[in-house]
Length: 356
Ligand code: COI
Image 1 (cartoon, helix red, strand yellow):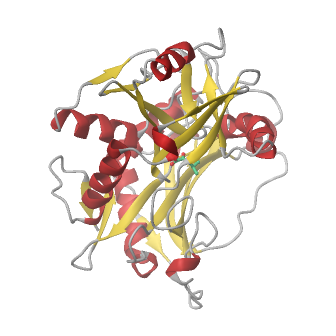
Image 2: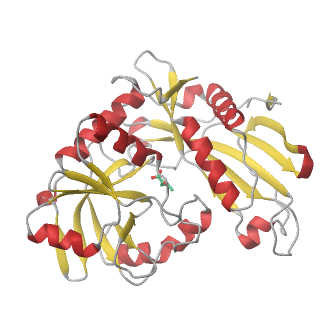
Image 3: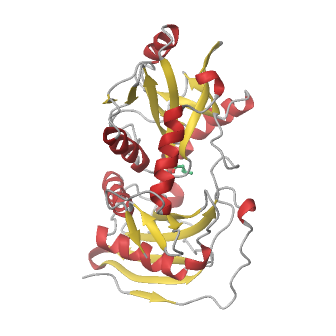
């Protein structure tokens, strides 16, 4: 049976930030969507309420064993003033896969989509309209049972908050990032949680990211956990490399997140007749391509930044500067195409938009 959603609207809406102040994840809209899960009852008590704190028992298992995961998707203002979600069903399905790996329940795809639509309908006024802006949605599931034994919780909370956002790195143009190739610390190992949006993956990434920032870099390039020889992800994003005209990205595995933007880029690239390959990419192959003058572009992809060009890869003291430090032609083209589809200024050939 579909979820019934009860709505209680706020009587004291917040002041909305100016578009040039947005940044990423700093402001939160007026409401929160919540639903509870308990044993055989499944998901119940779905509700939209004024945004506020969540009370958790100090013994709630999420606080001890980190049984938590999230999604990130966006709602976009369309040219005609309406609002649309981008690939919301793909986010629903990914949340189901991740929840299964973390022994958690997830919403049915139809319920997830209905929840996002209902939430964004209430928060419609929070969807900004300036270029490169959107309402970022953060659906999250946490284990709430008060129990200190180590086993999956018997109670969960699903919630979604909204954050009006600008471009991830600020500014209107794609800002290339400098990347440290991390050879000591790893983000995820085969057999681990790397393919899920478990909070734990992001916690695991912080130490190396802080170290890289202190050394003057923006993020790290993650190598595989076993041999430290193959590239996996860049920062919190999937990685793409353009070598001699071919768009190459690491094949999906249980240590790599199945990015929705990654999939969108591969789909569009094939339509454009660009040769694509999903396969293992050795760090040595990147260095070799550079030596042959065939390393054309490197970029990350994710919901938050869409496309994030890499200007420099630091393999220790060996600094590989890509495309003279400027965003490459394909990076710009994918960014413009995806943003255009999201905002309704380019045709939505795949039915990726869901109108509110
Ligand atoms: C994304 O690229 O959408 C991410 O996953 C980053 C997010 C954790 C801020």
